[in-house]
Amino acid sequence: MRFPSSSHHRLFSIHTTKHTNRVTMASIYEHNQQKGVMLVSVHAIGSRNPMTRLARRLVLKGLHVTLAINDLALKNHSSIVGGVHLEYFSDGLPEDHDRLNGDIDIFMSSLRRFGPGNLSALIGSCGRKFSCVITMPFLPWAADVAAELGLPCAMVWIQACTVYQIFNCFYNRINEFPTENNLENMVVNLPGVPSLRAEDLPSFVLPANTMSTFDSILKEVFCNIHKYKWVLGNSFMELEKDVIKAVNDAGLPFWPVGPIVPAICLGEEDTIDGDLKGLTLFKSPGESNCLEWLDKHPPASVVYISFGTLLFLSRKQIESIATGLKSSKRPFLWVVKLPENQETQKVEILEEIKEQGLIMSWSPQTAVLSHPSVGCFISHCGWNSLIETITAGVPMIACPQWTDQPTNAKLVTDVWRIGVKLKKNVEGLFDGEELERCVEEVLTGSGSEEFRKNAAELKRAACEAVADGGSSDKNIELFVDGPKLAIIPK
Image (cartoon, rainbow, N blue to C red):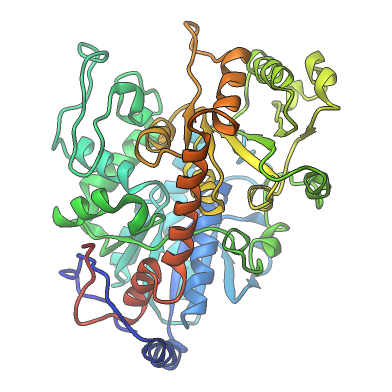
């Protein structure tokens, strides 16, 4: 397998015929069938999902792909799903350790202590020659394992390229960022990025950040970015063209290969996500009846609400959302998650609105977003949810909480103009009246037509990017097959 040299960072669109693509694909299969790549991920949905989907894409390009993951379901036997070979490596914690709700510092500390040796041993025992290790941002030590084994390393960036640019400029002290003394007044201006105030920045770069573990990991990644020969981004040229070009012009190897989403978002058959449902530490019910419920509603009429896999709203916020939904009189599908110690507690207003909509503890999100009856999505704006929403062409109501979500919300409202942002009150919360206002603005307000039009255009661009010959598809092929010339955005 040939990979592009480290000087080939810069990406531009190239034109190939369908016949040329067929020849290239045939040569890739023939050349790479005996070699492979090792992807490394942690078994958290926000990390696992894009890594497994990218793995499947690489399989379809002819590579032998192994995904190493700390999934206890794989401990005693490996598995092959969608052509991807799944292998277990230990994070060093006891089997009964709560990896979802437990102390993140304990988890990451154990992973750093035991992960390198266990991963190195796994690579050595697989009985296959690997040409590259592909990791994700929160496992910076995997790049050192690759170097010790004489292998090049790639990183899959699972957030926006805009956030990548912000972190690079912050951790390498290229630009000034807000401090406690200028938090309210400072505006951050970075190449390729819209002007950002403190409320628009990732929480990790603000003085109030208390997540020291993630701060240390991100600092290690960006202060040692030279360890990664490639950065494969879950974005696409047509979505973040200006910042992708700015990052590459600065000499950073950012290759957009997204959207890395389930096949159903692209109107294709799902070949891997469904098969992975059994390999999870997360509690997922069986197939939901929510799609049948959605079938009973007119197009673009239902409000979908979900705040991701890790975020639990307070009782007060749940009551505010319920009040706003009740006042809107709109049908809704709402994924409500309470912490385990509160699951038996009833929230009275939920009983009052249960005939108006469908309240669930889990939903098949990508199938929901792809359903024609969904008119808007109230979301925390995590990048996985956002890129799925863009690919599905659904307008949004942004309700960011922390990490990269405020920046993503800024892109939704001011750059792509596919939705609005919930405004918080003096207590830092949002109320029911504000939620009702946003629902009406997105579904029937003066800007609703523009939101739907912009969302539809991004959906088209997303599908074209990963289709044969699209901008992201070409970058995948360049990574796999290694051209003599590199590709930069024009």
